[in-house]
Image (cartoon, rainbow, N blue to C red; front, side, top):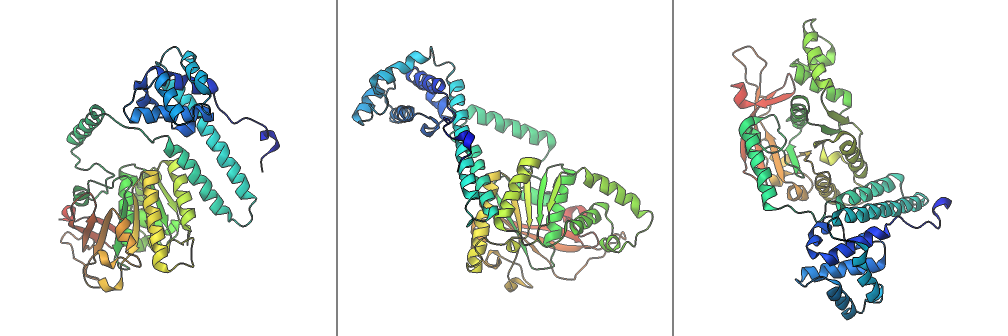
Length: 446
């Protein structure tokens, strides 16, 4: 169905801009590279213009000359000349534009009109789906959001960079690293030994953090999220499927204020503790950290909420606690297939939003008492396949090390980098401070 005010209306297009773009290309085929950054044949409204543009591109790709004669002859051989408006129309295109100097400006107008037509098409599909009572509302919303994001993604297709542009950016990055003395290119975890091996969390990567229950997966993820959001001011999204936002915030406050988490939960505090709480709360208040504690969240809902976090808060990294608590859209499937679907979708989400997605996962009981490996990832081998980085936490349960200086005890923990698609694997020693539910670099504790 369509609203009455839209019936009979011609979709948005600019005939002059379409003709001027084609005319400029016929005058100067060197402009084709510029235009391809913005347009494909389907972006033209008139069928004749679509055919002419595609013919120009085909000639250019095969190394042929591009002008009125060659394009007309190519159309004639393909028996498309009449459909493309005839020789008279092709010849008239160059008279629509004095030169090719403004071809990119014309192409952007054509692209803008194409985007508007795509939006109208999506709006019509949404309207149709909304009247289909067999479809769930949230699935309609997810589909609509995906289609709109695809329009945005399409605007980046076909772009390329010259060597001189890339080398300039590369040198700038090297100089920045030299002056800041930072050895990583991605988002810093706040654990120097880990960052040294991974160069930080990289865009578009799916990172899996695995461990047995009660080893500290959530505490580790919160430590990383706090380091990134509070101390580096980088926007962070965090889905907590097992705890409430309030419980999560108590952990973050305990970690940041360096106060015993049990005292915060029970209120058994000293007057002097409130100074630390106030200072820590002030730092957390200013942090770009965004939490969502929806329990049993559906995969489609999680993806939709992540897109909103990206659009509204420009999150640069996303944490999910944890993978197997996400509800599949196909509950009738075997569990390993459900997990495979979730894993693939999260990898796709990382690429779509161009941010790291860090997901916690339990490992199988087989790893109890020994170092976990990739085969221990629970319920699906696709997690290992889809992940760009896999980290495991491993420690001997219940063994705390006392401190000579009277500081709270720590538990030595191994952070095992079991897989890194673009870097080395190995083990990093870190320290778990159970009183603060916080992890720190072991090198800093010594």
